[in-house]
Length: 180
Image (tube, helix red, strand yellow):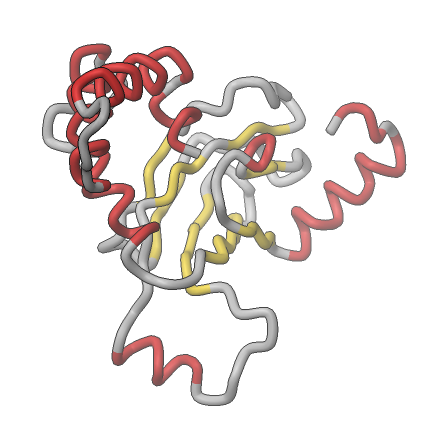
């Protein structure tokens, strides 16, 4: 996941610097985050106010992973994206339990659509912050065009869509499965 949001070049450069610096010594995950952040800031992959530690601590210091739900507006040009902890078998009173200790992640959101289908660009076009339970996205295609998130499954999260988008994806798979 990191090599996709940092880009492969930035990730390898940061990792090489980290390994050279800590060769034959002990290190912590924060040491790795520091070197990856330096490489990302140098390349402009991350803004100067964002660090790999801020992003990755949400993934390494809490259990589970998110379920991202994409609910598009009636005209389809915008969507509300929500995150919650994924549970294979949701328990009763999960909502109350989540309010006591909410699980939130920094989620790299990459997506494509029927009218601009590009599954190769896995660099996030948006970030969902760990402080956001909901995020509004704009500039999506009309409601008759499917949208697919988490391109090439490069993020460690599951995605669910509203029923209309699922129907559009299903129709596309029936018509020409190679388009997806």
